[in-house]
Amino acid sequence: MNRTLDSSPQVWFGIIVTTCLLLVLFQTVLWLVLPLLLAVVAYYILSPLVNMAMAHGLTRARAVLIVTVLLSIVLVCIGWSIAPKISMAIHEGPDKVKDYIKTGEDLYRKAEKTLSARLPFLHHATPPSLPHPLGAVSITAEAASAPPEDLVTSEVNNFTDKHSGDIALELAKWIPSLLLVPYLTYFFLLDGPRFKRFLVQAIPNAFFEKTLYLFYRVEDQVRRYFQGLLALTALDATCLGVGLWFLGLNAPFFLATVAAVLAWLPYLGSIGGGLLVVLVAAHDAPNNPWLPYEVVGLFIAVRLLDDFVFLPMTVGRSLQMHPLVTVLMILLGGAVAGIAGLLLVMPVLGVVMVAGQIIGELIADERIRARHRHAKELRRLRARAGLYPEE
Amino acid sequence: MFFGPKAPHDQRLKLLKDVVLFKDLSMRDLKMVNNLMHERRYLADEVIFDEGEEGQGLFLVLSGRVKISLPASQDKVVVEFGPGAFFGEVALLDQSVRTAQARAVDDSLILALFRTEFYSLLKTQSAIASSISFQLARVLAARMRQTVLLTGQHHEAS
Image (cartoon, rainbow over all chains, first blue to last red; front, side, top):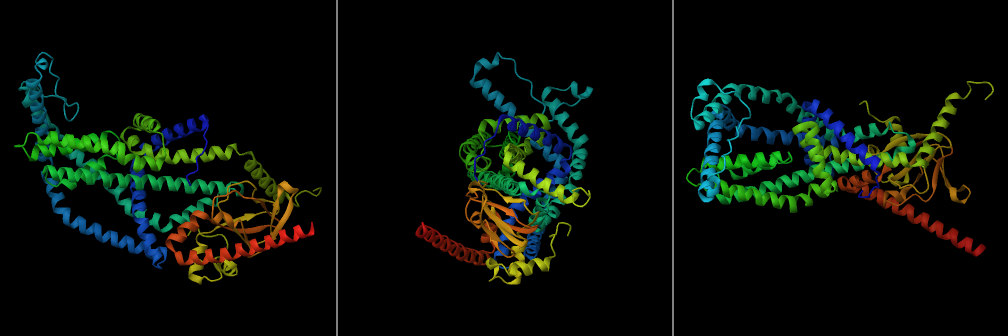
């Protein structure tokens, strides 16, 4: 399966254009693409369990049913145990957000003061304006007359009061989409192989073996990508969790898992996850001013470990892609389809790359095309048989 | 189900039961193997696979006839297979290229079992896959013996 395929510049041009077009398309139907993606991840997590059950003599239908029922029980138990905490978090959400943002502001000011004290030349530099944590918001006349510290706080309060309902509604809109995930996963597990055979029926005989090889390559690529991503997430979460536990943070493994999952979004996710944990550290340990900096140090260390050790071991190996191509495609994905593009570019590129290389091979193979023309001619002659008296 | 098999299920299972590779399998096991196979229809004179192509699996004749020939040596027919026979079995074991061409002599109904699917069977249903592997090894040994005998006779004659 690890055969190296030669690709011409035309094929690579086609791969990049197709990837960009797919990303633009996927961005418009993100409500469907996201549950599909999550269902594929769930499929690759659960399919070894289904295979294990089948190895014990169960039919696929029974194995899938048992795995699904067990998973549902586990999810219901987890939901039951965390529901009160989620309810409390929703209830206290806006106040908590204000608290964390206030902590962030304080941290920024303290860092600025410390730097100014240690590096005197910064006194002469124009102090940078504090970026608004919630982007551009309109400033009311009352707020404009307030001192700068109060101005930011009052704007944060205004924003959270005005938009917390909108944010909750936006999140609620995703609930029907996310409910599709278990449904899709169940049918992927149950009918995946049959659906694949159904698709294969549409392939002409001449291309049959090569195209089936393409199917396996694509499936192998997707499986290895998602398994690599899950392994990377587990490694990141473990390293961060141990580090945060060592630094004495509350709920270290929960925070580490959230940060590791956020890192699925290239660049932005890592920064967002790091920022979240730094804010929690600053908020929960106000008497330890060095803790946020220690957390930043931990994140940088894990990031380096991630980029130079874990990533090449997991996702990088699975996609067998040049690092330069990876970075350029991530930037291109972000440019054409925003955050959705950043999230989807690697799996989409992985699949399009394999498909493009094999389609390129099929098109370039004169012998296979001649075989296909021969088979078509045989079918045409068969269809014409007896229609014309002279034949 | 809209993507079910094209040939009647029971008829196909009966035909599979007569194939030497699957002779030790129960009906339940046979159904599992049947679910892994791809059904293809070839017209008379249509090429099934070509010499020099990378093989992906074995083909099994359900109906019709298939000839194996070497296009390089003036289309010399090496062997002809009828219902119940299989060919291209080496591709089930490795990723080597096909050494001959397979072409349908009559309109033929063929089943294909691919290497990756056979490997997945080895992982999930090792008893079934072992039984098939054992029968496959016996057939390969018999064919090798036959080839050695034929080569010996050829040398004696020359």
